[in-house]
Image (cartoon, rainbow over all chains, first blue to last red; front, side, top):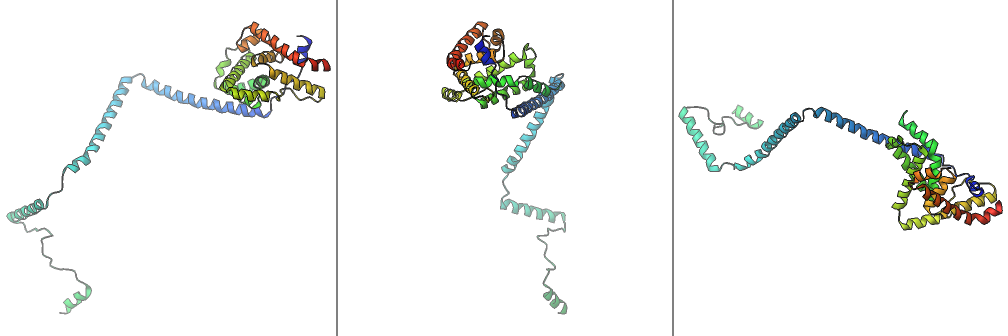
Length: 137
Length: 170
């Protein structure tokens, strides 16, 4: 090294700002933690793989059964409103005919039970004043 | 040893050298900080990087050099022009009290800023890191002959530019 080179190289360089140390090391630490979390996720994944790997066909069969159960369940749930929509409400003629058949059946078996709707009302609740007139009469 | 202590040891042992190298190379303090952080984050993320390294300092300088090259490539020509303008004013020497010395350091910083990046890197590593041409070649991924010729060209330019001032304060 000649004199010129020595003269230049002796010039002291600027010092690194003191505050940078904490900031840079903190950034490095944050990054390392993230990597550790990723590594943890990887460990969990490899653990699962270790559990599932010895009998992959058994696990695949179990998964297929579950998929089948869900599919059947879903398809049945899907059909029920469609079935209800297929039946239209009975026509008034049909209702009248059914009532007539019911009445005839009741007469034939001699039943004295008549539907509430057809039974004559023996006592109709009245206001209290009318009730008092009835008692005094 | 916990990894965090390893990073701290690396920082305390090499950050000053990397700072000076990057500041001289980029001529920008904000870029230097970003690059320095990038290097230490990388080392924290991949601690195995240093496992096979024979010379830690040379390896870290290589990382720093590659990071700085990437940064310069990411930028356009416009940004580089702005950078060159800034290079006229930046100083990476310690402040001096003596007025003559202050002028010399400022002129030297400007002369270094005027060198092409590849010559500046070699001159810096030779003069302020005391590396051999073989070590510089390994750090910058060039041949020792290329390192030597870049150093010679760079030093000649510095000498030409600083000769009047150097003769004056000699």
